[in-house]
Image (cartoon, rainbow, N blue to C red; front, side, top):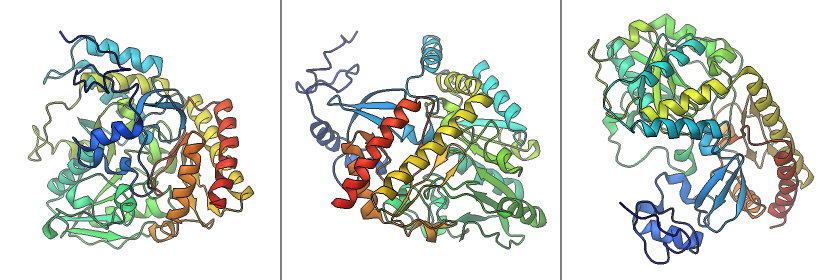
Length: 445
């Protein structure tokens, strides 16, 4: 048995105990330097390295509600919220209790469980297009599986994606992506052969493309949340539905971010457009790693073991993640969504007021509970070219000014801002004061 070490002194002593929390006397810089000696770039997701905003990242020790604390004990108002995976607030008591109960029963079995069945039923009940649901381990796995499934179902190869949308780290989907790809300033990534994207067609967001019978699927973020939050214009989603129907292509909604954040039936419920397949992540795990594909029965049953499209995963439908996800969905009532939308609206307003008072042009669109940030211009944004007018250097200055005021935003100019149940009126009031000081400082420097 490993004895629980003293978290205040273990880092300085070079502790390697598996129970170590890695916090205490060591500073953020010391911890990050130590991480960089063991992990490429010191991070396990590229955007966390602060490359686009400069400086070294804070290292999170714990979180509760709307706040995170770094290794030095500094508390921040958190607008990252695990990039949307946390919606009820960090360390929500009901989620923590569900995780503890599930963990006491065992962490993984490699066998079916009642919890995965119940979570699939909960998704099917809330999202009518999801007649069948298959779980996996991440949003990336969900989108890659959905594409493979669409190709297997149609017998076609071509895939249509939209400039600035991000669908995870899958080779065929990394062409001209948003989010971390946009933040790093690269159109795709090294290591992806030309053949992997040879059947991927990238088209402008918010424009309905003309398809032909070679297209297996169109995959889209129904609300683009990886290029700052861009809403679909009137007729865009319904136009995609009609065009896919015309040529027999599969319409895939990537709702990894919007699913259960924009409402109980996600973006498709908000805009009343029914896709053939939907990908999920984030909220359905209650903050734990999970992904899912749901959709029409006849397409979903093309998956193995019923059909020829292979999918498997030892940890898919993990009992701890499904327990957390079930609890999260149960707590997300209609009243909660109304309150979250009110808070998101308030966040957009207070950030706009702060920037306006400082003479900083900025646009903070909000769709439901999602808030975007376009710094350096205040004109409407409908596509990725519009989004790229963002002044990334000014965003970096605002980011660090907000961090100095103990407010944590995403370290990239093309990410959404997230509020949750932890962001009560007092937190938002504190945030407003901090944002006014930060905007003035960003402009002055």
